Structures are given as C-alpha cells and as structure tokens.
Image (cartoon, rainbow, N blue to C red; front, side):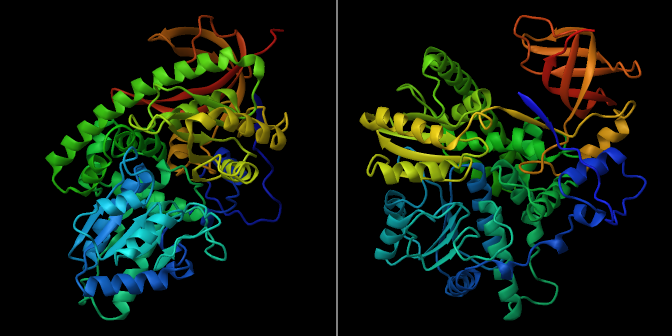
Length: 574
C-alpha cells in the first residue's frame, strides 16, 4: 500500500479568518479538502442550494398538488436499501404533513419483483393507486412505468442514479443527473432528491395560500432520515450534502429524531449525544439494509414511520437480529470467496468475477465490497437470482478509483449485445443480471475491459493521509475538534495521519484485535492505540509507520485520546 499525504501549504493571499480556537492541525485538514475559510465550514440550512435550481420539479409539484386536492391514492415506490427506506419514510411523512390524506408505500422484494418500479411490482399493487412516486429508483424503469400508465396510473420518478440510453415516459421526472439538468450538486442521494421535492411542494402550496398563518409544516423534522440515507448510500459529501447531514445529526444529538432512528441508535449501543456521520454509516445504515437483503424492507420502513417508542424498539431489535444473521452469512461467503480467489491466483484477473450457487443474492454486494478492499480491483459477485430461478444470476459490483463500473458494463453490453440482461448503477457500484450459462463469457469480458482501462499504478492501493501529527498534538482537545468538525464521509474523508513509532508493548484483545502502546521517538511520548482484525499470528514490528485516526476513548465516563490504526508497515531498525 502506498501512503499519499494530502497536506499542503495554505494558499497565500487567502483571508482564512480562522479563530485561534481552531487547532492549526484542523486548519490544515480543512485546507486539504478545499475548505479555506470558516464560511466554507458553516453548514447552516440557509446555505442549501435552492430547490428551484433542480430540474423537473415544476411538473412534479403540479401533479402532486392535483393529487392532494383530488384526494388521490398516492403510492410511494421505494427501494430495498437504506437510501430507499429513508426516502420512502421521508416521502410518506412529508406528503402527509403537506395535506395528502391517502399515502401508502410499496417496496419491491428483490427475489420476486426485481429492482425498482418493475412490471411485476406494478401488477402486484392492490388497490391500484392513481399516482406512483418513485424514490431512489425509476430512471431505468422503462417497462414498469409503461405498465403503470397502461393501467391509468400517473407516475413521478424521483431518482439520482445515472440514466441509460432510454428514459421512462413518466409524467414527471426529478433527477439531478439527467442530461441538461443544471443543479450544481449531482451528489444528492435518493432521499435528498425526495426532500427537495417536498421543499418545492411546500413553497408552491405557500404561494397558493394553503397554509394558515403559523401553520406551515416544518420539513426540517425529516432531516434525521435524510442524514441517515445520505451517509449510508455513500454519495459524495459535497457542501450541500454536508449541510443536510449536519442538520440531521444536530436533530439526533438534540433528542429530536423520530422514534425509529432513536431506537436504532440505542440498539447499536451508540450515544445519541455524540453521534457522528460514521455511526450512521457503520451502525444505523447496516441495520436498515439488512432487512432488504435478507427479509422484507417494510420492516425498516415501518421502523422509520412509527411514532410509538415501544413499537420502534421492537422493530429495531428485529433489524439488529437480522443484521447479525447478515454478518454471519457475509463472513462465510467472504471466506469462500477468498478461497476461490486464492485458487485462481495464477490467472491474476484484473476484473474479478465470482460466482457460487449457494450464495445469497442479497449479500453479494457486501462480498464484492470486501474483496474489492482486499484485492484493490473491481469485483463483481454473483448469486442465483432466486431459489426458483437457478438459470439467472444477479450480480453486484464494486469498483476502485479510475474505473467507472457502470460505464464498463455499458461497454460490455455494446460489445456483446444480449450478454447482460439488465444493469444500472454508479461509478463505484452497480448491479446486473445475466443467464447462468453466460457467466464464463461475462467474466472474460469483464476482465478484458478492466485490463484495458486500468494500469499498474491504479491497481496499487493508496492510503491518503493528512501527514504527520506534530509532537504533542495527539491530545484530547484535538480529538474532540476533529470529531466535531465533520460530517466526514465519502469524498470528504475523516482525518487520517501517519507517523513513525516504536512499539513499546502490545497484547491481544479477543482473537484478532491488537492493543498497543506506541512511543513517539521525537519526544518519547507514549500513545494508546488499537487495531482491529489485524493479528495474523505474528507480533507487530518494533519500529513501524502507522496510519491512524485520532479518536476519543470513552471508558466508564472517562475520556482519553487514542490512535485507531488503519495500516502499519515495518521499518528497518537503526
């Protein structure tokens, strides 16, 4: 692994204006991420991009107003991941707040209906709605939208996925990634797109005098859900998304989150008062995602819709149990995948495709993600689409920087027409379906395109670092400032440093975790450090370079700074 420093000199002539209370290290961290003055780190809701800049809202809002005033049955068609679940809850709650009396939702079962607003999902709807509003899907639902309209159902598509060559003939479509849309942020998650639609709907109703003085609905109550979905979907945390996430985190920390979010935080043994963005991504998101992977995402949506505290806790416990099952299944599948890769090491595939008939289609994305991290190559993991469809495979892809996975699938589709039955996704993640008999031909085509598009430098894993911490800087005060300075996340990474240390002592925690005391040779200071899943039978090196986060260790109410190690490499002793 190659460690690359993000640290750079602060640009000359720029009026930074930071308070002396802001640690110089944090100023450097901000500068490396393009935040050069306090205003760029002020995540006030007033600084959100205006909804009027997002294309397609006018037609969507007009249709929603017609539906609300006509007392139509409005059905929210969600997705079976965390973004889709939170977006569905935001849509249902928000439309009810804005006057819709008949709002229901449906989430496809991936094993029965497939992905998105499919014809199978439309046919299953009873009673038939007068309006369908998709959330986090729909831009690829050409057939599903057509079937809905044949049945006299109007359709609004809200999505953020990249469009294909053909768009569905929806009555309205809101997606910042459509060609020609001038919305400055292309990084909105599906839940963010839905929140923007609700903002625009409220503004239109306000202009038409629908709200009595002091009775306008406060849509900021939905921001805890927006934050969870945005972080969990791993969209880039550009400034606009950081505003949304920070506002949601403030609601959660202030005890103003919905009952379901509070219950999920409690079930994950996190603290409401100190919750940060990484907790949303590593603790809350997986519990919601597990329902869509192994069971029925309605469990997750119901958890987010209920206002009954005891009911929310019941759902959160169920989701935690399903998530534990998912973790165990994932571990077994990853172990099998690693054996498969080891056996095929002599082929040295650049684009890695894996298939095992016993794998679960709801977990292959996590397998692809884990293998991508370990191999630093694009990976697609396949499983049978369902127990009743062994002749069809469903694949989930994860990629590395420099390899746009959806574009790669589009290129394979162009070169081998009919090989891929369906596909869609982003630069870093995608999904697809193909016939089981076609898997060997697809695996060869995927490896071929990866060899064309990637060079050896791109296949070398890179660990970004904010450089060395100065002697004496690893303090509790700085740890607190770094934690509070986020929200950190995708494309706005958590601060990570690298220093040379001497290992003064170490011991095992459990079977695979390391607890170390690291001495800084510059001043002799000793630092408490931990590294998870790092022990492989040998002691850590005596002299080492460590890449780490500076975090807070809270033990029995007493706080202390700690180094959370991400990577270590041995150095030659002098």
